[in-house]
Image (cartoon, rainbow, N blue to C red; front, side, top):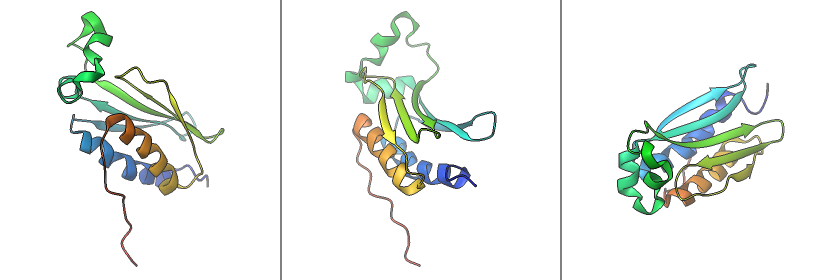
Length: 134
């Protein structure tokens, strides 16, 4: 079994979902897999009008030009290159370059690292996720 299977994805999402929830712009998540059933990307899609209202300095409306406000969603991608053990983060708004996060194969460690990048971009603060004592 690979370190990057469903439990790993679940752990990463448990760290990232609260970041997107805190942004409060209607983000909805999808997990994508490749032809062999391995995770290939995580996608969070935001409601454009909510995003622009919360982040007017993103100038997302200008980046879409004549297509605004008819764009159905704004994409925040975590592209997973599991062979190279890295995650490329690509987002809309603010014209950021892609961010690259090394992956260790530990969902909690990787999830925390990916979530920290998204939290920095979206300027949200989320309390660290803590496991209950057993």
